[in-house]
Length: 194
Ligand code: SAH
Image (cartoon, rainbow, N blue to C red; front, side):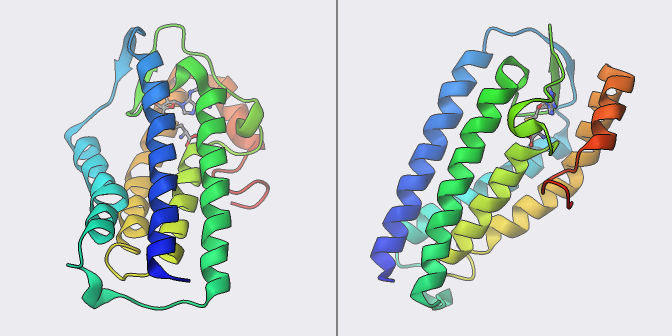
């Protein structure tokens, strides 16, 4: 696929991604936070992910600086990247919608926080992280560049490894047996598998 086409498709996907995030972030502003675990490690890790999935792709799209690291993929693989991007956007929107007022961008418990176990949370505990993982795969298949394409996946993997246990521990402390039962009957990222 022509590089300009695949870059444009990825850019449109990222704009839609940001629109979803901004819309839900605005709704969250009024809620009171009762437990905040936004540590320095959390902040560093979030910055790393921002660099990996926003900053480096932006540099690659608007400048020729990273072109020395380009690779080529067959057109059907780029097509797979478009499908993955679409699935990722859908899951990102659905997980925001299903979490509703329980969502926050960092590790927090809000006043009136309830445990979401319906919708895309019915079979997996981390659909939003699954959607970011799909975005990183789409990034590698559409932005065919070893730096801009692959760093998203690397940075997200590090962030996920650091965050997921802490998040589950926080929810376990807040919801006790209810969360333990939910944990027993669900997987983390892929329904019935992982
Ligand atoms: N890990 C989830 C949510 C990411 S947003 C996912 O990938 O879909 C992070 C915030 O969501 C955390 O601060 C936590 O308080 C909240 N959260 C995570 N899972 C939840 C659930 N099942 N019900 C309610 N809140 C949840």
